[in-house]
Length: 108
Image (cartoon, rainbow, N blue to C red; front, side, top):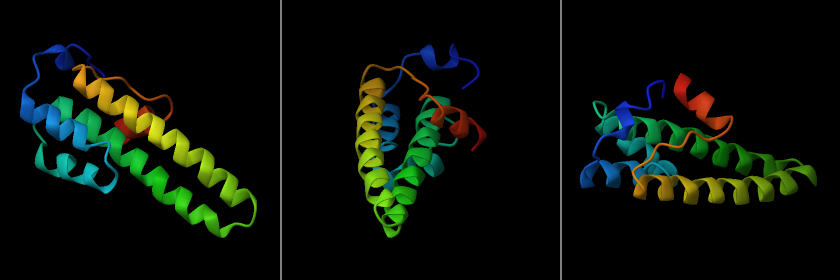
């Protein structure tokens, strides 16, 4: 998100619930579609969608012998960690941009 001041406003309970839902796998599509006019929710929903796409890609790498299983394990742990950080960020009312993934999310 370009302007962090937009995200520094008071965030309501419904916005927090929708933003937290963004980090729950495929449920990230719900806030992306349902809260189009809330920049705080859209910020988190876009990051959640990119994170979910990474998780799906990691599942497909299991088809690659040896290296795929290692990539899947590392990706699973990283995605879990980023999801927990994302939900914590929502609970604190902040918008923390993930390294690398956050840049892709802004293009979404």
